[in-house]
Every structure is written in C-alpha cells, then in structure tokens.
Image 1 (cartoon, rainbow over the protein chains, first blue to last red):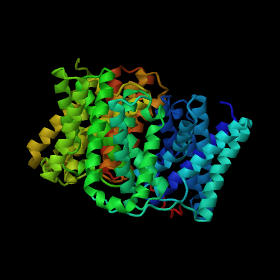
Image 2: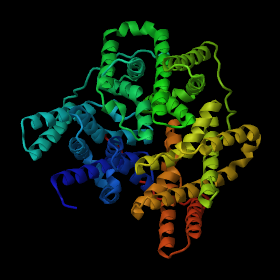
Image 3: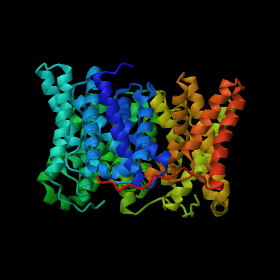
Length: 207
Length: 207
Length: 207
C-alpha cells in the first residue's frame, strides 16, 4: 500500500469517525466490543453503502487497515479517556474533517467508476454522512443528520465545488483540497453562526 | 425516456410516497433538506433494496427523475402547506395508490429478471413496503408496517392476483392494473372495516 | 437438495432464530404477519447482508425452505403458545445454538469464496449476529448485541477456533463442530457467570 494523498485522507477520516462513534457508544454505556463495532460502522458504514450501490467489493474487505485504525481509535479513547472530556471542540472539528475527507473520497471513487456528476455527488454525500446515520440508528436515536444544522447539505455543496474545480481543469490535489475544505468550512460556519434551513411547519400526520 | 404505462405508475408512486415521507418529517420538525431526504428514502428505499438483492444498478442512478420528482413533492408541500391539513384522506389514498403501483413495478422487474414467482412476489412486497420501513426506522418509530392494519399482506395478495392473471394469459396492462387494483382495494377495505390479522398474545420475553 | 451437515445446521439455525424473532414480535403486540416478517429478518438478515457483501445471490432467493421454515416456526409458536412461557431457558439455548451454527455457516461460505481468514471471521460474525440487530432496529430497541454479555465476541472467538482447527488439518466436520461448539460454550458460560467486557466510562457527548 502506497501512502497517497487520498489514502491519507481516508485513514484520518476513518480514525476521527471511529472516535466519534466510540464516544457516543460510551455515552450509552456500551462495553469495549460494542464500542468498537459502533466506531467501526460509523467509519465504514458510508463507504460500504456506496460500494454496494456501485456493485464493487466493499473497500474494507480488501485491506485490513480500516479495522486496525478503528482498534487504534478505541485504544486511544481508553488511554486518554480523562482528556477526551476536554476535547469537545477538537473532536467536533475532527468529525467535521472526517465529513469533508470522506465526501471527497466518495466522489473520487465514483468519478473513477464513470458515473454522471450528480450521482457522484450523491455518492460523496452517502460516503460522508451515512456512517453517522447507521451509528445513530443502532444506538436508537433519530440520526443527527436530520436534526442538525447544515450537515449533509455541506457534502452536496462540497460536491458542487469539486465539479466546478474539475470544470476549470484544476489539478486533482487542488480540486480535492478545495472540495473537502468547502465541506468543512460550510459546516463550521453553520454551527458557529447557527445557520440552518427553515423547518417544515409541523403538520399533524393523520396516518 | 418514453412515457410508458409502467413509467407513469412509477412516477406517480414516487410522488405520493415522497409526500408521505415529507409529511412525517414535518411532524418531526425536520428542516427542508432533512424532509427531502426522508421523502427520497421513502420513495426509493424499496426499489433500491430490490435492485441490490437482484444485483442490478439501483434504478435512480440511471435516471434523475426520481430525485426531481421528490423535489417537486417538497415544493408542493411547501406551497400548499395549509391545504395539506385537509388532505388527510386524499393523502392516505395516495399512499395506498403508491403501495399498489410500486408492488406491481417490483413484480414486473423481477419477472423480467427471470425469477421464480414467489421471489417476484417477495420483491414486489419489498418494493412496495420497504421505503416506508426505512422512513420509520430513520425517524425512530416502530415501522407502521408492523403496527397497521393489512399493509404488506396486501402486496402479497396483489402478487398472487398478478400471477393468476398471468396464468390466464391476460394482457400485461390488464394484469398490472388488476394486481395494483387488488393491493389498493384490500388496503382500503382493511382500513375502512378495521380488518386485521389476530395479534400474537404477548409473551414476556425473557432474554 | 441433499441434507448435508451444513444444511441441517442451517435449517435448525433458521428455525431457532425465527422463533426468537417471533417471540419478541409478540411482546410488541404485532399481528401474525408482522411476527412472521420479524421472524424472517431475524433468520435471514445476517446471511442476506453477508451475501450482499460477497456479491452473490442472497441464499433465500435460490431456495424456498427458509421462508417455509419460518412459517413452521410461526405455526409452532401459535400452537404451543402456552408452553412457550416455560421455554425461557430452552429458547435462550436455541438462540445460542443458532448463533453458533450461523457463524460457522457464514465462515464456511466465505472460505469457499476464497476470502482472507479475517474477512471470513467478520462474515461469520455478521451471519451469526446481524439478523438479531436488524430485528432489534425494526422493533425500535438498541440492539441486544450492544447491551448483552459476550455475544458477537463469541462469534469472533469461534472463528479463531475454526481457523486453528483448519491449521491443524482437522477434518471439516470436526472443525465446524468445534467452532460452533466454542461459540455456544462461550456464550453460555458468559451468561451463566455474568462475564462481560468492561464498559466504557460514560463520556458526556457534546455533539
């Protein structure tokens, strides 16, 4: 395995998403193994769904490093537990970085598969945000995706940036950096300034 | 894209299921984007699962009209919000129509894939009812499928009607209309007359 | 269909998992059809996920006996309802047996598919435990997998036993029996002696 730029993005994204899953599992009082699995599905859930939709072998079956990275994330959480309390903001930052990185990884893979641009953006959004959805379904919460300030929408925006850069013939590294940066910036700004889309007025469902 | 009978069924089904998802999302106070996604998974969740099981490319990756139809459904909901209150019965009717249409679309696709008749019925049932299950899991409710009067069972009955018509060599249009009509009629009658299967007597689970 | 050793394991596993799903459905006051579906997803959910990941046709599409076995399980539950109350321990035993059997079936299939040993163990664990996870998500509970004494971890341990036996060139029947037996024994001992992994200290999530 060569350590390319995308591989690095991928591993960092895996690590930060695993941490985010493990922390939520700890809030639900799960044991180590349960926390490991929740960390794992957070980290690989989005990419696995993408690969199933693209009908390619799920990425983690070809390379053990995702399972190992999650194990490292669990170890780090166990060792630094006390400090994790103080990491609040840092970890939110990490989670947001993961969102940006995974979105770009997902778009990149879909472009390689020759899909139309809007399907690539959907795949990027799935790669970035679906792991967190699976995590939230497993711990029996309404997925944050549906409650939070701009989240999946940041992935869509980052996807548009990706294809604009592509259209302008920017080199791949620049395109990926700008796209991931957009996702991260939009999400950070949305949270800092409490930006969100309007809510639908509640309609009493009668079914 | 030519507008065949099946395509029309498909688009109407998509629209009514998207509306049903968006309404439930509004009851959960989601924002526009969250509501769009819930509407989308309600509309495409069943067919996506079917296509994954059949190992074919998910239908919505080949054609943007399902995403567009869901966007139209969101716009309509936003514009007619006030009136949607009064639509209760109409929307229930729409949801039931969607169930019938999607069941037939699912069976049709599976027959084309050369599957045995009982697998086709299962695929029709999945196509018709699984979008609603995914919707309910995401908004953290026990799926209506498991609580409601005759629902998925109506899909199974419609599937049997489909293959009876097939056996009698009825033309395809008639077969599809009769099968979808049966699903719709059974569901409407079940709700009107409160027909339901007996419940299992609660057994205290000791695990 | 010839009744091989693995087929027998498979059918017994299907039956006991279906019973476990049906019992939980009855506790949620579902009707017969809902209970059938919950029983079915408990029985086939793990293997279906495995087959989607391996990109092979889901096993139940090729053979109606899994749907029939679930129907038999429902009939048995309806007929013996009163007695099921007294079956507590027996059914827990059955559920544990299903876990062991399905883990081995999953590993076996993955070895045949030529996957590396650690992926086979993951697939065995998925086959054994994911049906119960899907069941719990559908009835809107945090999956037992994440709350219970040693559960999925027993599958992992059984997988290691499988490959140790393999390494020692034991015949296939012995390997499968020892692996399934290990899963069952570990789970039984864990429950009897309240063995469990340490919990993660709750960390107040600030997301």
